View 1 (cartoon, rainbow, N blue to C red):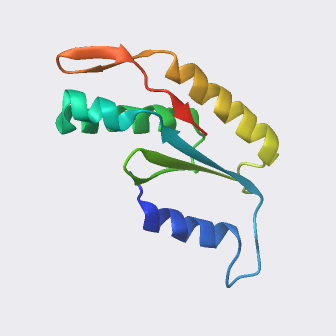
View 2: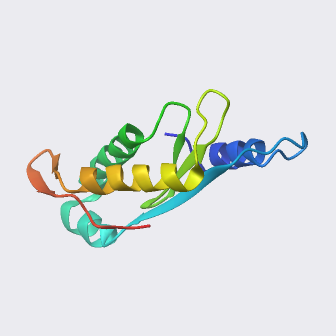
View 3: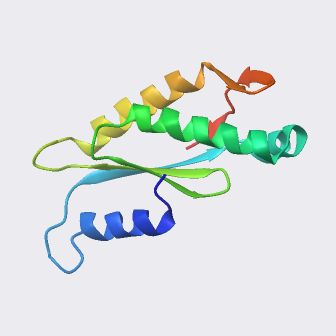
Length: 123
């Protein structure tokens, strides 16, 4: 999973810093609500498994070339970029991806020994 530095590198490219060639796109911040309670109750190992499942679900919601990165803790960022290979209207793309994310949140999440509904998220 790309980290904060990878995200910053991609943002620098997207805004055209140093090249003067910026691209349109959308940036989405996602924070899992009450993750600390779940992590403390079920243990850090299961919390890590849950974060991995969340990351996988987020990646399944975006197009090839878009970026899902974990900022740290329970915070994720989705970067949707407009490229010649994938022209997009940023607002439309953000709406479509956010709908996919919310639909994916409706399904159950299972860690060894426990299943739960997916955690709520703030965007």
